Length: 240
Image (cartoon, rainbow, N blue to C red; front, side):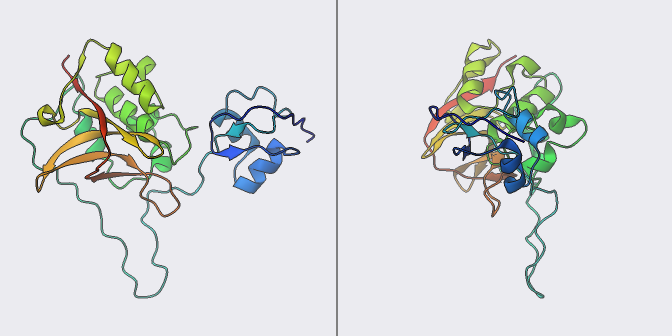
């Protein structure tokens, strides 16, 4: 496949196209396919035309539901994640179809890449082209959809985009962390950008959060519940 590569300004993504690259060559090197790259990068209209200096989203390939196998005989497998909710001062946030916190909790321990392949439920509302190291907004949006708190058109794969959509929704109100309920949407500022999770209650005096987090050895995300120390940008509570 011959591909025209023209120098241009870089844009966001996780692989920078080099002069002379072809989409088929990138797909082979990254263990994916041309069609998967096209789906993950809708800005590409012609597989034979990619542009040096621009960046591509590379779909992850290594996620699975199973815990990692022991690397040596006698090595114990990782323990299963706790499914117990931390203590909370109030009831979980509820939507017309349920609690986004309880929906998220039911998927603890699952890798984002595999969750996106599930038929029905949260997986059906997650967009599968999103790279497996940046699914935080994809996952939270899907949980809110499943709970009936937002519509499909409000789903957003960027933290600031979801934050803006909730700001425009009259059913959501910004509250302080002290007034948060499990399931409230918490947007954070990180050294590399932004992250979004849901409040999950308090444990040993520390707030806990549930979401799609970069906890796998390869940098991809898994649904986990933990404390975090990032600066909080907003806490959105459903009031519908």
